[in-house]
Image (cartoon, helix red, strand yellow):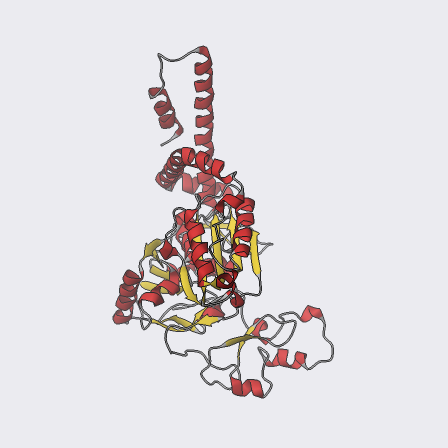
Length: 459
């Protein structure tokens, strides 16, 4: 729907007989505003599309854009290319954005009004629950996320802090205008009330009970409660307005994903047109992964976009099956990969490895599932796929490097730890024995120096 079509729609629906000078003036104003809005959305869609083709380069290098297997070095050439060859896609994206805006206008109005309420109205009644039930007894950890429009993230942040504190929950919750991402631990009574409160909130009514991944744990799995407002609910380092979760790949239920992986493994061909892509960090995939996957050797998810840019030829004309811990990184990661227009198809595991292992504990994922809390990993099968850093014995239980200035994780078996091998590498081990050290040594060790920031992979 372009601006002229939208204008025609406005004119067709005018109540001509009921017009008065005042209403005519109001209609004229609304018509003009709608037309400007439509034009703005179309321009923004075009700019976003072009921005998604930009290739990450070094800070001193000239910007480059890649599209349709061509490379463009100046803005005019990429703009002309997109205008000539991708006009239909721009129209489709503009129409989708307009339809979404128009359909949500009334809903957002009601939602905004509800967001102005006092946060206490969203806190569940707990007078019937004893303090002991909230503080003691069987516990668990929840993992969840929800992409949705949040007009006032600070208000939701305040509500989450009050809610978790009242229910004696600890953990981490990220809030942004694009949604919420959290992992919290406490007693089963507390987590049950938390889920109920989330599902009752007008903003998160789109969520289902199944969206909360549950594992054994407690409030002790986290040092404290951290709730904050951020630009992204998962830190990929790319503006959500440029690469939105709405561009994500096709979601596959665990059963369908299992079938796809089974077909890939049965094929066994080195020239398969399918890539099983792990979009987690190297230390996560090191202790657990799907068989025959491509696991990038990256330290942070914010490196993933640069990894894709550097390895585009790996994904050219391929069907990609992506997975991560709970699904959230695949939402943005698959969107970024799709924006490059090199893949034949992009799919992602709905609910992540966590949901897959609930259905297939002895499936194609082997080893532990890394989690970002004091447990470091949870187990669904007995396989150990990683080794001790020092002696090479099978071992998959992480601990932090024993040096105060290093935040690396280390796999050191009990036997090696008894011998004093508690640092992540010999370099840190030597630093630990120094009587003094400079804080500038932080995370400068064999682990970081020997690993390229963005690896260049081959299949």
